[in-house]
Image 1 (cartoon, rainbow, N blue to C red):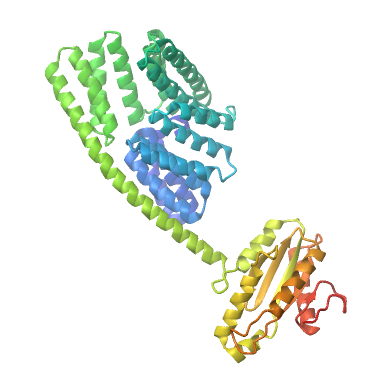
Image 2: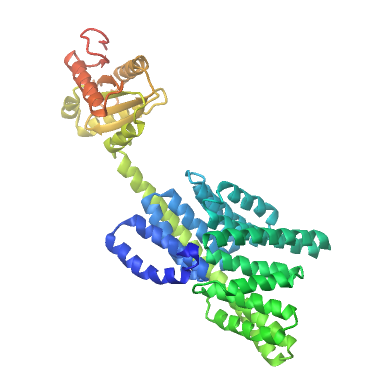
Length: 511
């Protein structure tokens, strides 16, 4: 609905959908809905509400551990922060979103993140840096498959070229400025074609109004009026932000054409709508335009009143920026704390609490992730571990397990180590041959049996038995059973040895 300009209708459905999502107790749809609601707020001109949705969405995506979801929420958040004048904070969010988006295989998401960072740069008047990012965003998408994204990015890059034009003209380079403006109009024309092709009425309304402004700046008033007429004829319910944009654009163009009396009611309606907004920038801009038109008509008392209101709105905006900055700083601290907590919970869920090794669940996931790739599996068991506990205490036994875990994770060995439970461990050697695994296992066996253990208990000695099995196109359960059987063969042959096949004498080692 938001892609076809039905943002007002879509936003009305958000509260009901949020209640339904909460009842389902399913985190992902709830996070998706919060993210989409933030985008609708951006479309409709409700930045404060949008930022609240982004904060909640980020928290949900963090708990879910989904990088892509968080990247999109933060990208939208950067745009919303720009809307309320927090450009520096918006840039930080855009950078973070781009960093997250680059970690997932999603060109569309990466393009959106580039677009949001470029938008922030455009608002900072850093168009030389922003335009290449807009171009990169356009290059990442297929305009035929994603015309709505193409229309949005083309609209935004046009804005940057107008900014370049203003900079050139301020420096006396009028022709260069006009060249930038013509490029802006060309990009806008392409945006209009893309938006019309996919029925994206929201971007289409923005492109028509922007295009009318750009055309009027070049004196192309017939094109400006054509764009405004086509915008006014679009179907559907117009959002708050879109309506204000249309009103003050048409009012400004009528004023330039000398039709100041016709411009007055349009600017007055825009200012009345702006008064209902908590967006100080919209409020101040609509009041300023109204004051300008009233001054042109000689209505100086009204113009002065509205100019004072414009000044008050600008002052209020500065206070709002300070308040919002404090809220954002607090939210960022909470988000960082939540991120650390989630990482801590995730680590605890994946690791054995005593040894720090990855646990059986992670072992199962690792084997599954290998699919049909070759690997060697080793099952390690400490010899006579019960007697260590009985003779030296369970605290000593725990210390032995911890030290064994440290040896298993040594950089000397190219394997993945897991604690399966008790005194049993698993070694996973992806792409290894049996000869390589056997040599590594024997090295480990000798290292453990020759280590000094007396600091943990006088007379203490520790050895291991190890059974190895190769995948060889067999299923996981068969490989696991074979490694387990060979482990017990090692035990039955006297312990402290590595068994890698079923022969009786081969690969038996003494201490």
